[in-house]
Image 1: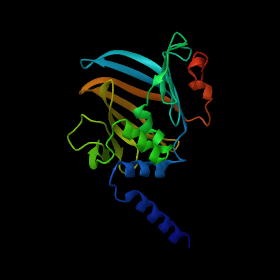
Image 2: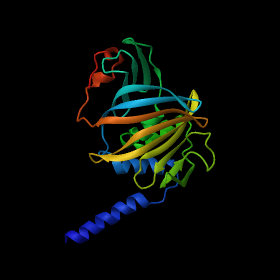
Image 3: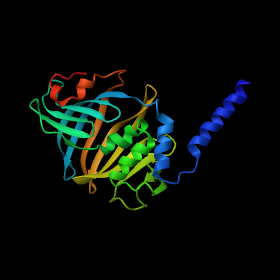
Image 4: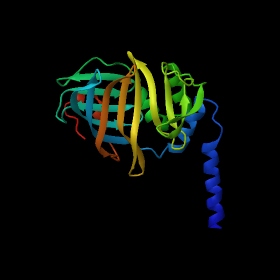
Length: 242
């Protein structure tokens, strides 16, 4: 009896993720169904951040980051003892300078939302936020990106000037996102690797109007079982360690 039951389970799984996708909500719903309860909740890593100007590397920085999904990310610049960085939490962003938190301002981090939070928030909630950010969820098409089949939500083929995100058709993680926060950004998640059973993009490339702005390379990647919520309190930034 084991073999027939296995085949039934396999059929149901394939049917679930090969069903017709008519709009962006279908894509978000499929992402949620595949990974809700299975995606990593806590994530820490170090990154080398390479900044570019006129196509040439201008400088390199080392950042230390900790994330808790949905919606929380803290970045320390230079060292873990740094008093400089930024905190994203509760749909706000707070800059930290010399250990002093600046005035928080409203901010929804598109990369966090589509790359991670969609696996935790109910699809209706994610779609409501995406709609408020200007993504046209009624527009979806299939394409190929870096040799993999993808769903593109938000724009017709050839239009790279409006908000859109590119989702791996099989694995249902994000490859690319175009959004506007002050200036338009075109961001690619690449070098995906399966680590401890989780898919992780180890390289992120940022462009604006076709010009390379920054490349992030991730290492020292870990998936802690827990992270103290105080890490994401701007007032406690200086003593935060992970």
